[in-house]
Length: 389
Image (cartoon, rainbow, N blue to C red; front, side, top):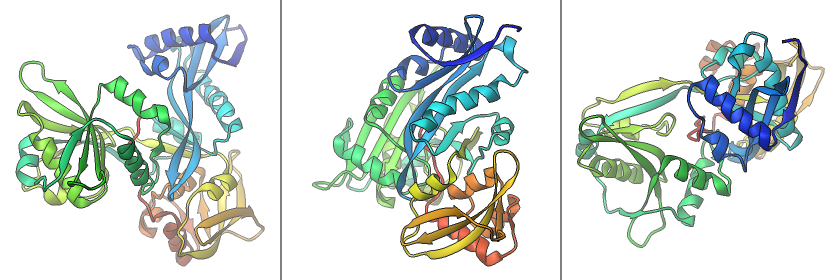
């Protein structure tokens, strides 16, 4: 490996080379390398004219506190097997982030099983990610569909509903116009809309089917958006009777919102939960990430914080929140609460639901009141990322 390593953006030839490398590294083709070519940024590492590492990056907005925050979403990254062990992946991450930061990204999100590696680079997981499986008969016998009308196919109204509901969580992607088409075509999705007679759409459901090897099939839910409890119950009832050959309804990882409609409605709780690798968030630009995020409108406060920086040192900041806006500026005042880079990211995403959870995650605070105030600042909405990239 004496030949010099260079990093560059992908042109047509490098896209093709990277597609071949990813197939070799993952052991199977990665369809998104083709599907996202018009929308993603590709950065690669080249040695001796050969692509030896790379990855895709999407500049999209994510909702936090009800506001859109520009995010560098990284996916489909890999290093050639013969190049592993030389910390190339760390250099590659820096190069993948660079153009997205230049275009305005102030946070970054990844989904990875290599949580220790990502944690060392400043990412942290704000919540667990689960896939759920429930018997179709259990849904059919536990929920009623009320008087909801079901219509097949997407609509502008349904997409507007999805955006409105996404704002009520910390993490969902503010889906650009091409996003839904990409997912629909990629997964061969079937979409349904739910509404009471003569009323606006209040539910959006997307699913696909998975045939069993011998008999029957499963439904795999990809999108589950409900404006209220009755709509969610109606959608669950619909899933239970959607297809008599479907014995199991599977909610793909992260698809089912973390509210208790399913838990409280089932007559027999025989669900199966499968843990998946989590989504992880990293703050790239602290002042801008704070400024762009949404904040509680009924809260006015100022809290001094010490935050770990990228070199392992510590900076002193003061967070000021007022009437739904906030800013964080350097200060000489000793911090009442101390955040590592990862803890800052979890707090930003609303991952600390109480002072107890924050302290059990290692957050140090000299003032319980200050810690409680910080938790309240970001806990208005729960962390949830139903989007896959």
